[in-house]
Image (cartoon, rainbow, N blue to C red; front, side):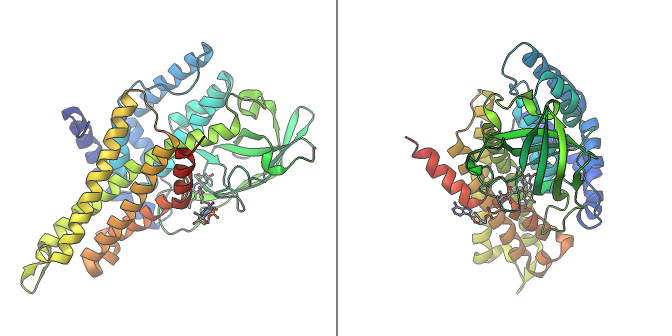
Length: 403
Ligand SMILES: Cc1cc2nc3c(=O)[nH]c(=O)nc-3n(C[C@H](O)[C@H](O)[C@H](O)COP(=O)(O)OP(=O)(O)OC[C@H]3O[C@@H](n4cnc5c(N)ncnc54)[C@H](O)[C@@H]3O)c2cc1C
């Protein structure tokens, strides 16, 4: 696959119309007035029948689990549709995609993968339909890139229950989440090295005793996606909140976290493409109409070089996205090295293109009205979350040189 089909073009048209009428008019509220993104996202779900599709998708996953099959989502619809939505939303507000992806992908996906049928019904369906908001909490103040080994949030056995203590930080949807998928280290009273302890995955509900969710943090970009801390002070949970109701779920908490990294990293390529496409479009229009010394700046070679490099990035990232879609259709999953390579390249390309767009627009590039400054700020976190650039390099090299 190297370009969108006619059917895809039609989907692009629908999504673009929705974005133009339902997202762009609210961009100031999302960006500057602290309005959470969930109403806009819910409207999109209803408008495109995504809510019904989520219910059907949930039922299929539940049936498979009840039938004893692996519960991982099996591809039943065109993966291009999801990529198109990501790309089109990212032209305007990448934060919306971050919030949506964490709630329906990471939080619901982890529950569906590791949870019992009862746990899926209790929490995952409402997240998949966006009736409820989900968060996925692994990062801690002292354990960002070293998320699993450095984790200090503890789950101490107490009779049939666990007592959770610790803090999670920079958690997307953290301030508003109704449901929080939370990773913690099992403290079974032994003196073994904390780094090597078992990682357990729990599901918490907003309002539980001892659970505090911070206010949204002020941050550089992605204002369309609220980020916050989650604090745990002696939060008591029964086994019904431990995913799989076992300390030995299929693959384990560590493996589940790693599986999520693969999905997230591939998704960042589509997010990057939306930012690149939009910045290039704005830059071309601007360069053609802005006249200096009686000439459009698009005629100046130094501006042309930037436009050409932006186009190279667009072509490369498009190809990554198209090849990912084609492979997904064939049921192929990228290796850890491939997913990390996609993320590393695409995130850096998005940042470079957005920065070049600011340069081409000059002073106007720095002014919010022209929107490339927002896209540049929004792009920057793509090089940090879901694993920093440096951790992608480490992951690629490790995966390639594995014995
Ligand atoms: C907006 C936003 C949303 C987020 N959402 C979530 C969420 O929903 N859930 C969640 O759990 N987390 C979330 N995170 C956390 C995110 O995943 C972490 O910020 C990220 O993993 C990096 O960790 P850190 O910030 O602690 O950086 P650190 O790990 O402290 O890294 C600092 C620097 O050291 C470098 N470094 C670290 N180790 C190495 C090494 N071995 N070799 C070379 N260089 C190294 C890093 O690359 C980086 O440059 C979010 C973060 C942000 C900013």
